[in-house]
Length: 210
Ligand SMILES: Nc1ncnc2c1ncn2[C@@H]1O[C@H](COP(=O)(O)OP(=O)(O)OP(=O)(O)O)[C@@H](O)[C@H]1O
Ligand SMILES: O=C(O)c1ccc[n+]([C@@H]2O[C@H](COP(=O)([O-])O)[C@@H](O)[C@H]2O)c1
Image (tube, rainbow, N blue to C red; front, side, top):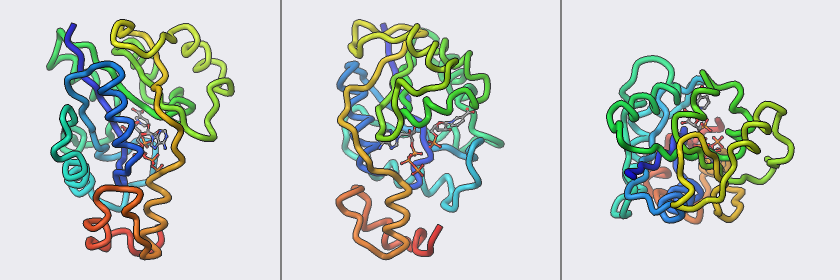
């Protein structure tokens, strides 16, 4: 079975947590490739201050030389909102024989019922969820909780299947882009949080308080 890992995010900016999740997704499911897909126009947030192209360039730089990690610019190029249903549908049409293995954090899972055509999303590929401090799997809304329990399988290459959900066996991390933006706004050194600390500081783009 052909497989492709998909990891969408604002990446505003990319941090070590994102990279750790992408590597963990690749390694846990023996995926030949995990594509990081920066959001163009997010449907669920106010417009991001840093342009889609800039966030994409930083993701590309952050994964340079990493085997099996790649960047995909389709949401950056798309007009209008970056709905995940459109991205997964387009990828499935492009790779009809491939199982899409897509990753979100537990905070995203908690809000999934607000996503465009979210029920269809669950049947498009195998969803993998990374646990996040503050987002407990036993406190999801009833409808998400039902789908989660019904579809849950152990995270392993042999359990991969359309319509299933797994939890990523990654360590909990509190790191967020919000923390990174706040530190950059104060002019603090962020080299412990991201591999692109020098580029972020030099850009001055997060220098004022968001
Ligand atoms: N520390 C983390 N633990 C688990 N999931 C995470 C973590 N950081 C990001 N993610 C997940 O990665 C995806 C992309 O995240 P995003 O680019 O919005 O980063 P973020 O750190 O959540 O940003 P922000 O602080 O701006 O909300 C989301 O599904 C999010 O849940
Ligand atoms: O399709 C939707 O309706 C939708 C709603 C909220 C979030 N998403 C996607 O979820 C991913 C994580 O979002 P975020 O805001 O946590 O970076 C990113 O790829 C978004 O485009 C998608």
